[in-house]
Image (tube, rainbow over all chains, first blue to last red; front, side, top):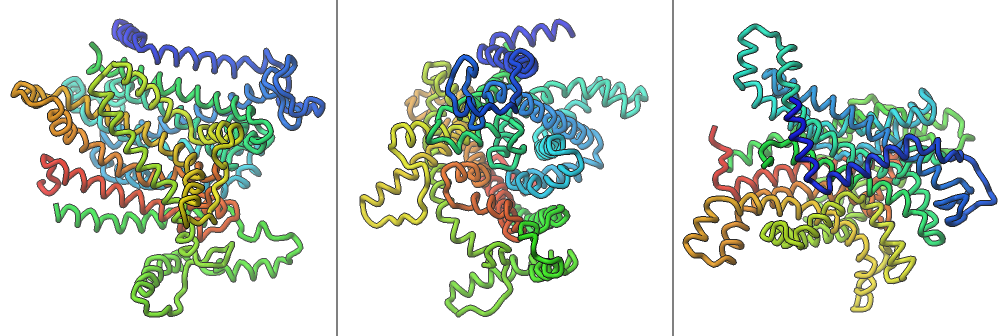
Length: 290
Length: 336
């Protein structure tokens, strides 16, 4: 086990883009986790005298139309964006893994579950996401408060509409794995289905799940920012990267530089995630290993 | 092949009906009120009257079946009549709550803009992607491949709403080369008005084309690589065929099979993705119609548009599967 893990790590390290990507991701995660403690300006603090200020010592990335510090808002926004993406990806993965394992392992469930997957794949996702969020926003806002409500809504809606790829990949792997000798032997010895799945099958499908986890986070970040960009994400006073980008586009003519920071943050994060995903695929797929 | 196609077509009908039902239920169960945006001074009785005039008084199954009848029977009949020029008889049509005009007319009004911008960008994207994929694969690990792979990774990692905004900052605000707002009323009559049209289409088309090309060129490259290492390529080289013939006749034809299906599968996604691009450049196409309808709580328009998007997905899935069978003779759907 340890030597296999070391082999994976050695293979991952040879992928230069993946290593750089992982480094950038670590920096981004560190920045949004600890940044607000180090750069302790309140992102909601309105300082009207600093309105529309450019880059200065007091405001390293400038200030917006109400004089709120852009750096502080970027850090706070990154926290929300990454948290939404993480939560959505977690939900999508668990749904995908459960459905994939169930339909691969239990033959009776295979037909209905795969038809369900096909149905979800045939739904126009972005329009539906917009519709669901627009229609259920007020109800959840009333139930959980403006910020938590929207967070729950966006994370669960993104998660519930992005599990299909994972489910299909996991199903394929399970179908192949359950005919292998060690699984058959364990079944012949009388192991119940639950034990077979958790002890023998799940560890075998962990690498495709990890790869789709990596790529899923990137997709979730883009979807969340796209929703915010279309004005159907978080409320205006609640910064996320997508929301910051959307707010800055109103001042495109006067302050074109302002769109740069949130856009760069989204793009760099997603780019790094995609590189890490590529590296993981190369490292975890034994067929490509030299 | 014929029976397979027929079977799939027959299976598509219940699928589409089911999808339309899912969309309808989702919209109907949502806690939203079409009269919520009206002034608060309207008394509750009048509000109730408005709701009934929109058809909300009926029970849910009646409303769903009514929508089905209007969309699946009345609208096609209207099209047939218009084609035959047999005058128009009075039929109930799907009406938008916002404009009180038929939704299908709204869609027909918006379709040309979307098709021009989105369709053209997809064609350009494919035309860029295929040569890049071929060269990248043939000269694997060369500087061209390195740059191409990097650009395509950047191309699909950077969201279109950032590339679009960035292009506006540089070319519209900074250099003033292209207009940032798409003018739909512009008519192409002569050479100079054509140039204006080309200039206002340049940026949205570029944004979408880059995004599409990035994805397709990756598929093209990996499909070419898979084929270049096959035995039949070595055989062809051993027989002394010209390298150009091996590449463009043997390898390319086999590599195109999965790529063609990917291109077909991507068409409906392009329409979905265009929602964002249309919003950035203020193109009043289908995506913009959807956004406005969602914001205004205009459920018939949302229902019809979403269903059309779903129909596109189902249709192009079918097209992709059939293309696969036609292009690859080793795939036989009919045999059990």
